[in-house]
Length: 277
Image 1 (spheres, helix red, strand yellow):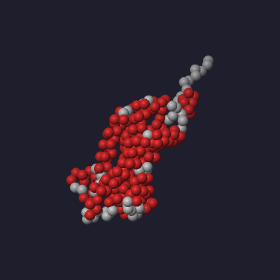
Image 2: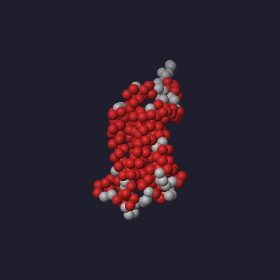
Image 3: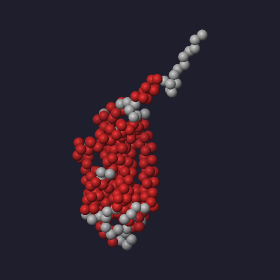
Image 4: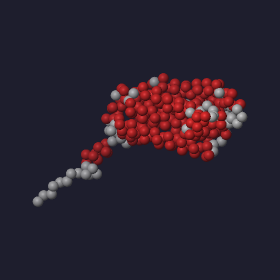
């Protein structure tokens, strides 16, 4: 009496194993997607403006408009550039994340993203690629804003301060990229970038971007006090204002950035699952 062969289990099914083994590893795919996005900046010069030019405009405009606030008793610095150079760098980092949203929406509208989805790659690479691009672009504004600010007599924050500024830019760039991707995955249109801008300006303007908490009152003070972007700004500015980096001003910014990225990661992944179930 012959035994009836049993159906292969998922662990022993050769077709499933071959399919799993045929997927390209995540790391190289993410690297290629990041490289493609960075190279596209040179091919689309208009993409450079929001990342490199707009932060310079904000630094110059805000430094001139708000220069008198340094006379307020207790203001942390008498050099207005020390206050606005880090702020302008963070604005540029936020715009870099928005640029990733634009690129992904353009790929969706052109059909290129459908080709990526048909490729034998791990689906997480399609999310991590744009996130990696946000990280790579987020520090670009520092290469224009910081040197120009120093040329205009901003204080050098020390290499520790530069490092904290770079980390703050990375955190905000990734957070903005995740916010933009979550919207793009849901609506698949570049028109959603208006909502990304609203999110960026809300987070930055309802913080200590322009003035410190000590000179705020009313609902704006309450909003800035609980806004996690406030802690990220404190971390970014500490080298400029204090001349040194301390753990007391660093850990709240790191925790705030990690919390924002954690929450927005869930938002982005759930949107991606709706796009590619």
